[in-house]
Length: 88
Image (cartoon, rainbow, N blue to C red; front, side, top):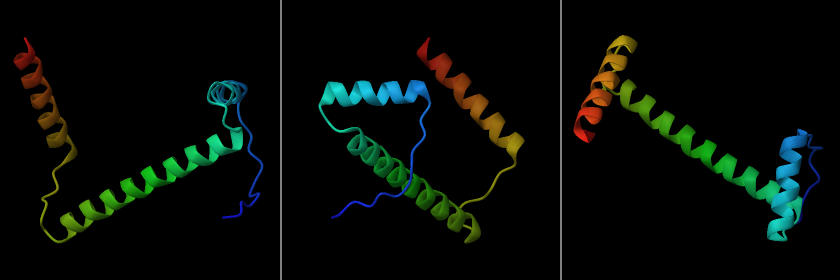
């Protein structure tokens, strides 16, 4: 598949240094590493979007009951406390 020069990429000096170091350590070209990173990012974004869409559909169709924010925080606090007690 032919590649297409799509855009110019501007990196911070820290990120550029990390990219240069990784390219040197792996012997892979920088553009290949960037393409792989972007492909992984978009795959993860697509997975997240699908999960959110599915959860929205579950709420919309009544399969999942939404809860208020404060109730959700209380539930998380209780779970966290129970785990801390269980570990000790």
